[in-house]
Image (cartoon, rainbow, N blue to C red; front, side, top):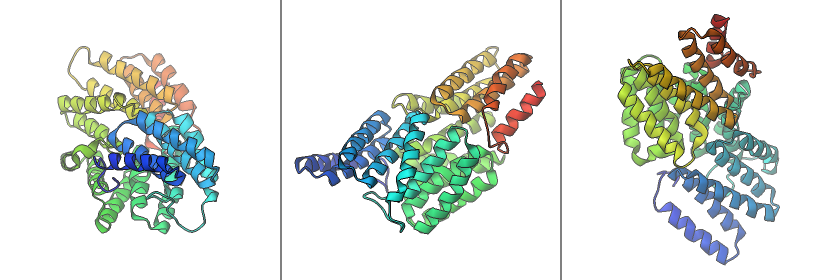
Length: 373
């Protein structure tokens, strides 16, 4: 499952393991099976089923009173709730997991599953902090996470350090130098430790960085080629960012129809299994592509999608996406000469930030607000 991703044989094998563990009243193997069945549902895109397994794991761990089991329960719940789109509850559980990390021995270890718990807890903490608008804290966690991942030296964990947090967060921050550096690190790491899916992901991400640097033809080719190699695995949560950015790049390259088709496919995929963490950004990306159309209703349709994006982001307390959606809508209102409305829309969102003012999103929002003033 960890090597292939959507391994069809993995789920039935662990279901049988869970049945055997329950019949033997073996709590340890019940926990292992529930953990892995939860991961299997992440891979299959069924977030509701994953959350159910995470809650079952937490319920069983609560009866053991084992500190490590309780920490793992919070880590698993945080992951499921993060992908589900409930960032407030995800933050509650990830903070509890971080507080409980002292229960682990100081030496590196893998607890029951194929990941180092300290390392994996911190890269999800970074993701959640970023979405909640704690930008500088998220970037500091990323730097520390890379250091501890190197020290631990566990190949699979280090893939996730780079792919789950370092690469995406550098990209979201607009730091293309760091994004390029982390992408190269992941590519090199997966060449030395052949982990096929992360190797493909790294190639896609590096293509995306090239496209962002305006080498759009070569970058798009690398990104598309990698997604084709991934096959069904492109439906894993880790590939969702790449699909959304592919749509955005296609729109920028003038391939409007294909960009809309790509983003619609990603939105449909999110809504069906409730993988809602990225849907606000996908709706914003769709709005930006729609605004490029040469149609009389283009601006109105784009605005509808920006408003939907704002609503999703606000409900999820994902202020990072809320700022992007507010900036896109305010820029549209500026073009329509609805300046006061644009300022009243963007200003309150910008004012909620207490850090991260050097990042691209906040710099763009600040510049736009100055123009509106």
